[in-house]
Image 1 (tube, rainbow, N blue to C red):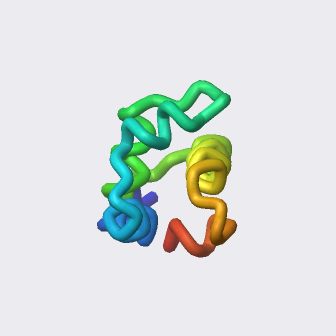
Image 2: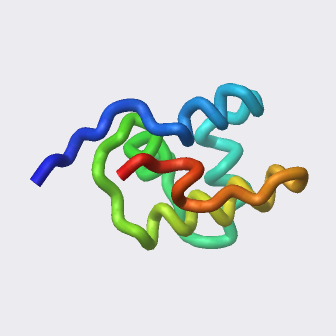
Length: 75
């Protein structure tokens, strides 16, 4: 089972929007940690539950576009 998938589209979206991990953690109304966001950006395997938390946090910050899992993760 492969656990490393390389840099994810999430990382590029956050860079373009000038967002840091801290922004997602602060925006999340759920328990989301800096470590979970960092793992997601670098392509480490995370659960679908954590993916959902990240997507909801990002969508709460960016109102112009609503991202889906396939937009941010390639695994």
